[in-house]
Amino acid sequence: MTDDRLSGVLSPVVTPFKDNLDPDPERLIKQCQWLLSQNVGLAVFGTNSEANSLSVDEKILLLNQLAAGGVDTGRMMPGTGCCALTDSVKLTAHAAKLGCAGTLMLPPFYYKGVSDEGIFASFAEVIERVGDESLRIYLYHIPPIAQVGFSVDLIERLVTRFPRTIVGIKDSSGDWDNTASMLERKWDDFRVFVGSESFLLANMRNGGAGCISATANVNPAAIDRLFKSWQNDDAEQQQQALDDIRNTVMAYPMIPALKATVADFSGDGQWRTVRPPLLPLNEEKSVALAKALRGKNFAMPGL
Amino acid sequence: MTDDRLSGVLSPVVTPFKDNLDPDPERLIKQCQWLLSQNVGLAVFGTNSEANSLSVDEKILLLNQLAAGGVDTGRMMPGTGCCALTDSVKLTAHAAKLGCAGTLMLPPFYYKGVSDEGIFASFAEVIERVGDESLRIYLYHIPPIAQVGFSVDLIERLVTRFPRTIVGIKDSSGDWDNTASMLERKWDDFRVFVGSESFLLANMRNGGAGCISATANVNPAAIDRLFKSWQNDDAEQQQQALDDIRNTVMAYPMIPALKATVADFSGDGQWRTVRPPLLPLNEEKSVALAKALRGKNFAMPGL
Image (cartoon, rainbow over all chains, first blue to last red; front, side, top):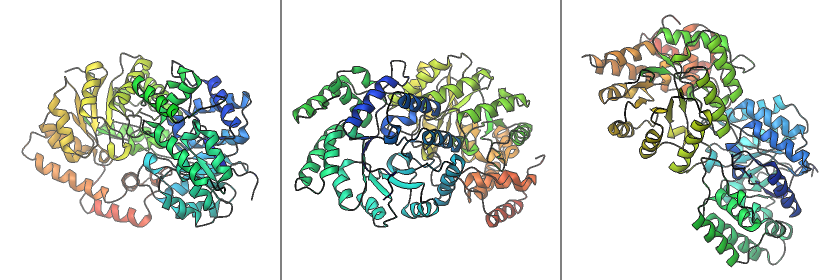
């Protein structure tokens, strides 16, 4: 085991916006500190962070503001994979320079049907250009959205060529068989995170490293509890309770629903703001979601 | 008819790279001048330009270099639609400031399953932030790659709200019925370009404005000839000849094949270079493609 690899539960932290749609660093710092207080790590700039609606310069500025605001970069795994090679290099290099524990990297996702060889070439180029020994990359496999992903053979090729840099993956395929096929390869200390806590127990039972899940934005403590106690007798029961909360939120469009929940349980309505092309949850749905969650005795203590 | 709207044939100009994968402005200027000499307009930064593998700053620099190099911005329709709202605003504003005849805009394409309302909000925000009366936007509908597109009802809503700004579309759906459904609406002087010259004759016969096609990089004069003479008796024959060349090139991965063809017929091998995640055509395929084209008496005079 190498100490600098991550495990546990991380949240793709939702990004707060001001009325003019600029990111709001103060609210983001506060949210990150709250998540850390729940023992949940910070996968800032994930899909659920609306990171793909932010420019690279906006993300660099936010990273600087988080670091300056005292948020521990050693608990951060920012998303740094962009369509453009030069964007990925710039953002990844900056994250490494700031001491981020790792970066979570989408493959270049505009061009479809690209070859494993082409994706390999892209990562090789980024790693060479960043040229930072401290860089730790977690691959971000989310074919339902990116439409471009990592085959198990491609991962093996990357791990073999860059064993100290390519150290893990977030599997958001939603397909347990795919996750299992990665775990079966047993690459040396390779960290497999599932992209949903629905697979957390299965992942832990099969040698996985944890999960990086949207719902960790709102239900962090309970997810972390299962991560820590998956060998306990009540693990299945915990898993069921996590699934219940997740399904309640997922009945609505994910990102607006997460933001509505943070807004409702923090009393800070500014959290509802999203950037186009997303739209905020309407009043009716917001009320229904909050009611459904309260009906399950759901809470966000300390928020 | 308003004079500042485009029609005819445009090429999503392939982007030359140096060995270090930087864009090569000198070669691009030369290619643009050659295309203009064939009466083909410049849809720089299209899909086939590998534009989504370039950062916004790289694209702004290239636009400046093209303008400084004497390439007529009045014949340009650069691609300016990005995932991030702020990127789209920055690049679109710059293109308008340089006097580009129009911009070709993808919808934000990372988040899938977004609503028409959300895409509308995105374009409304870009138009308001750019705040340039001279801005002319051509929507870029390419669902096979972007996976996010424009419904006919969304286009109608955009045209109705922004009649002087949303002035046309490139339909790369590959579905003639979709193009026909746009033409049927007969929005006032709305310019419908097909994304392939395979549909050029059908488009012209139904009131379309022309085509913006990858193959215009290599076969510009013949495509322009059909655009000008589609009412001639030999139009069907011309269309067949265009299809034959297109099918010959399309038997290989499109962008590498276009670049290999430019390299082969110009004698400048540097054109073969692509950015990851794309890979250049291998030697065997390059030779086979060039041979197939020469067997059809294909040439690129003046290149």
